[in-house]
Image 1: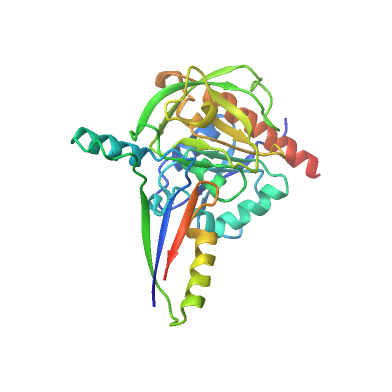
Image 2: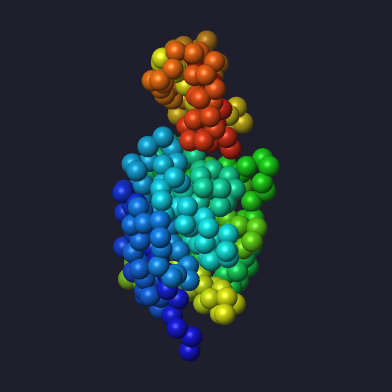
Length: 224
Length: 78
């Protein structure tokens, strides 16, 4: 058995799903280290999770301020070196603002904060494999006010997840999540860390988290 | 000198707030309202009295942080 993946979960002021994401990763077998947003020097990590919440109060634009925090410079470098990076909700917005993923997220079509279980279908999966098979549908909740995905006219997105039966937020082409061209950076609005226990209605989030951790271990072994 | 920056969503991007305001105005009986777009105003106090330098700096700040070129456009008023 390889050593478990060692994952850093970044905490920004205003993050509120950092503990949930850490717990989700831990339940799926990871060792988790919490990383403060002012830490530019990171410990040795196999992958990084950027959690949901309202980093810097969502001031200016969601994720706009977080992009320039010291930790994000290191995250961008690690992503360029092939380390897997997962962004959930506000984390997805931050990855888009940082340019690690193409496009942007804007206010929901109906101006309402949506908090609802969604069904998403897996399409492209980059380095994240295992049970995350194309066509598989996952039941994962969303909770956001600004989750409508708008593609960048010059960088076509690789769609990782699409809402089944229409988006809850007016997202272009019902896009729920995307993966980078290199396949190691993935971001989505639904919260896999809120779908890891049957008591809470679904364990489908574990499918993505386990696929992410497996990719982290693969990438570590490839470095040796 | 003070420079005003107006940031708004590009024409093709749905401005859900603008649309809601447009509907509200129409509900109030203002049938002449044909469209509403919203945005935000950012007032910068810059350490220069040279209008061209101020404009150039404001443009740099817009490109770097104040606007997201994927979805937003900006206008600089010196």
